Image 1 (cartoon, rainbow, N blue to C red):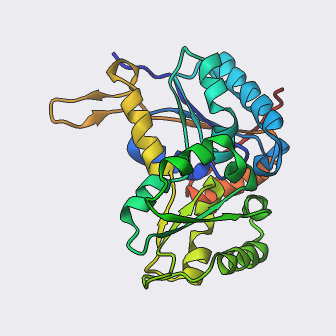
Image 2 (tube, one colour):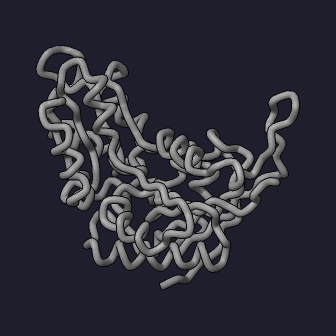
Length: 277
């Protein structure tokens, strides 16, 4: 017996595609429904009330219209502002959020200096500060709010992406593996994964980049116990799948979404327009 209901995934825009990519790699047999709320973005530059309202509206939609069996909040800002309230309101399904990878960064940094690039909203959130406090003494964290970077990635504005990456990495200080240099950089926004090449060109290949997609995918798989999974295991140990599907919806520009899916997932999509909330 398998459960073919989809896993719901949402973000303020295309950034959550980096999480969807990790989910597909971890659980290729599953069906997915992805909602990009780019008609109400950027979350990272809006207040918590706005983010919570949008998170509720999208979760309502995914449960009512797609009967999702789990929800992945593929947005650091929405996780920080709303996930505790979303979990309390929707107890019937597992809900997985994403947060900046501060703990693994502190554990692996050799210089003890960790950079964190995130939206201003994430860095100012209570959830982030609790995480930071729990790691007191484990490393020194250099926090950098990155106004405008997520929306530039959303619009595929290459020149603006390069300019902002240069501005923000320069503001953080020296990168490298020597004493006093930042040797680990945490990408605290799912959009920023898609600026990895630009960042590596600026900070050098020896600096470790950490993002949260893979840990989220592993946690989602753990929470989906066998009765909720969409594949059986054959006698040879191979998973049996049934042509898994991905549905894309956008509250904003559907063509922009199709372009992002083609660029970052390497596949074609027909994003459907969506009006919720």
